[in-house]
Length: 470
Image (cartoon, rainbow, N blue to C red; front, side):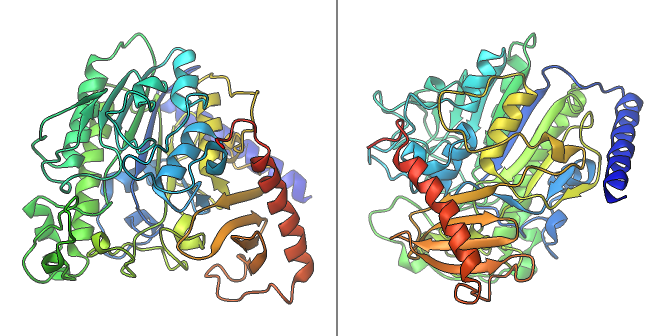
């Protein structure tokens, strides 16, 4: 009986989506346009549509209202560089040799032999562009480390690790492989404007893949005064942006002023994303474009670790931990997909999915060929779009963390964290204890053992991966 009800539910959902598509003049295109919006350090609770009581994010919230919102979406890592490697290659980051954020001139980079989503879609006939943060090498000016235009993107405009001196008038922007003079304006406006310019001048005989990687709300940030004014009641003192890139930390500027500027930074980012969505609407591409929105890792909360994080007040939605950690607050992040031909408006899924899944899913939606000559850690999650279940599987994370917990594995409701020596340390039942308060490592020894075996399968596979840099 339960199986019959599920089949009926799936049939009703499929018919409703067909009706939606016909009613709006949308048909499932063989090769839809694809817009992947990946933002920087946005927490699970940092959007109105994810329950924030103050933040105004109407444009991103509209994507959730018109599409599918995931409540158990995970970033590939708790840090930016490995997460970006994961979503662009479909491979858990340690396979690519990217364990942490990439410092300048460190010689760490995404290797030539890795196949990116841009390369897969370009081979399938797409025009491709990356606007915004790259951070998959240690020098955007290097002639030896691959650049975005060496890894499948026809066009690039953006920065690497973080914006200098902050979001206003950045001095470290590149176009393709050329360093540019100071760019006047705020990064959110600059990147939205550049995205629109590329959309207008691209080869419109091809479908497009636009990877829009916003700088916000990564610190240090600056905002237009009118956006700071929106949240003035949540701020105190004179607004003096913290400057990155100085020889010594600007100690005199490290003054906690409350969350107002952080809120303003996200609302301003939302407004600029709205400009890009507006262009799609004005040019009749809103309904033939797969729009995916997500974040590279969890929030920087007010439990600051580094001086440049002062005045970040990110929300994990109540989950434990933050960026730099493998607790839920460090890796569970928002994800939304809007595509009326396949996704019913206002739908919600609690299916556990991970960033590597978006590589596989978007590649398949675009008619691209997922590489078969290497380990791919993501799966096609399109069944979720129709309300169906995914195959039972384990999700795995590895991170050079600020704690000594470097590995994690989730299967079903159970999540196990292991230390740097690969020893099981903490076990949680996320169905009963999503906040990860109660460590069951001793009372549920059999479960811990099963998950440790799963973790070791991943670790052995990574250790033996022939493509992993040594």
